[in-house]
Length: 133
Image 1 (cartoon, helix red, strand yellow):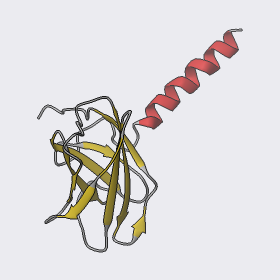
Image 2 (cartoon, rainbow, N blue to C red):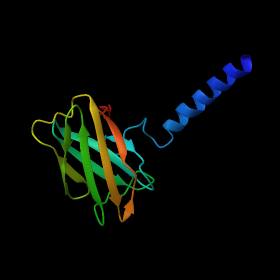
Image 3 (spheres, one colour):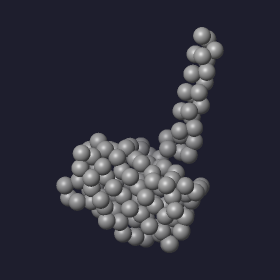
Image 4 (cartoon, one colour):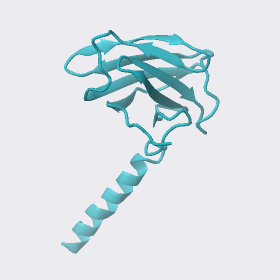
């Protein structure tokens, strides 16, 4: 019985630490939430209740780029909102319908390609965590 309890605790601890192995427990360089959908990181920063900035960062959380890149974001609550994402200087600005409110409980589903590298979808729970600087 003790062996089973030890195994359960051991794997729970290992599982929790690996869940944050890519930095999801720390703010990104722009103060946003981080996910790793592939060989790069995405950083989501809320601008206002219906607008989001998405940075495509390298493995070291640096060098944001929009070159040969694309982003699409869906905000899922009881309603599904699709964004319009446009390239900015070094990030994508994703705008949702005015009725969307990123402060509500839901999730953001981010599909991104960074410099021709296609990532898996990244999911962020909303409201996004506000990191203290």
